[in-house]
Length: 231
Image (cartoon, rainbow, N blue to C red; front, side, top):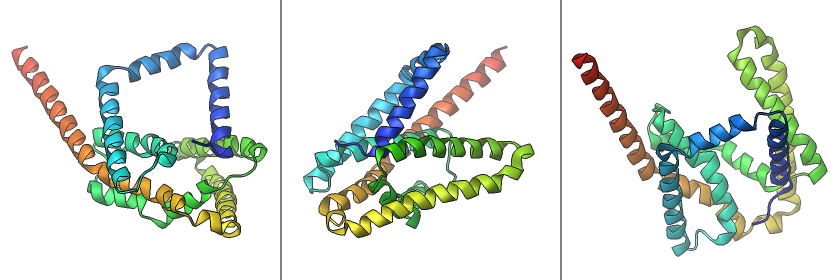
């Protein structure tokens, strides 16, 4: 399971961030967050999701659509899609039908372009500089979107992020063209197909999870109403 320079740089900066937080005495808050995540109501559905993903990967492997070379992509899919999809289902988002939402997330031109961009990374020193810059600009965009007083910064930040996107995507396209023989392989096809297939296979689990959350919410609401009546 080889890591790209971008992934190594990202891990480096996350480790540096956690180390800095620990030195500044924020480690207690992080441990409290970890303990909250390990609560049975949180870790239970997460473990079920991982087990279901393993089952889906095994089914895909039976028809040669998944191999151990796709393990890293599967792990990234769990963190970037499955976990977010479960959170959205618990919050009753998105409002559109799950199939339509999954298709919009996986079968778009943007998804293809991002796949190309992620397939090729810059030298490690360049990624080490690029990763924190992109994270800082993305964080600033989130802050600006929530504060009307800083709305004037929306356009400049969007322009900067657009430049970063063009740089990263351009590097991916350049790599795909110059190294087309290696890029156009069965492994690359699997790497592109696996997240899409896993996303659609994940739909039954997501629907059942959403139904269970709705049932628990209704049951809790009914219990509170009964308590209010008794009082």
